[in-house]
Length: 380
Image (cartoon, rainbow, N blue to C red):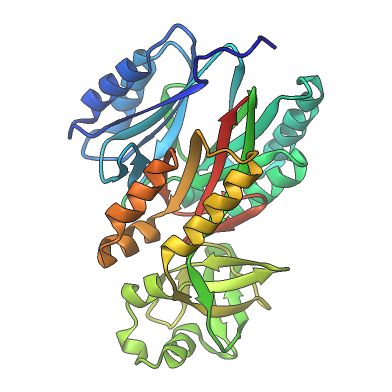
């Protein structure tokens, strides 16, 4: 591996001109360099057709470009409701290796094989090299749980983080970008290695309320929670909240995600909507026997500062030079409704966060909701 240079191995660019084609030109110009080896790009879909836009992106760069659609963006200045947020990665001290996993609904053997191959390549890296994998996945495939657990198991100890593509709550199409095309029922796995140190973080701001509720009936394949404690799920939820089941609405769901636990770690499972039959449709898988509590919102800044402090410590007492962020769209909606969007966005901008608003977040082997997951990097 080459000796360190004074050139940063990554550079961010954001553009929200109102015209995605112009935004492509803007970020391409900002990232241009003979040493550019790859680009990670997120965009908020608009009336512009995606296929011509993919060709425009492909023709604007002479290196691999991967990415996906998002409900909003994170970049310089914080949150952005439109446009493109992109990251350029630069040699010679960095390797950018993108992979496409297609036909996710037909099985995940390819994901297992890919993880094992990436793990096997670790032995050839210099002893001081960092290594991580980023996952971008079509949210409408509803395969995130199996995909991230499969990759996590096959990657061994390699850091893994990612997010589910989004489309501004339309739930029509959430593709990933690879090799000049947008792909449905697919995922991009981006392997990065080189002269950097990486560490992961997970932040959410919900405390569990009593009582615990047991899932007694679920349609796991369709992510539907049918019964809690033997009652129709919506009815049980309304009773715990002290409201009429007919008044349950998205505002309650945004304010009160379900809190589960694996060992000492809590995770969130968010409710998408209530169906007429009293079933709750979720943003993630649910299985019978799981125990959940309703979440109560606390200050988002307390958990965020705690996680950023822990991230700094994990990076050798250095602030992240880049934070690859995957931030749930429900956080974006919540902060917009509570007037905190600019303040939270500014804090993430100071942490050098680049990312997008997702339909789900992946960290280690878990798919979660209403959470900010991230991978922090510092060059060495």
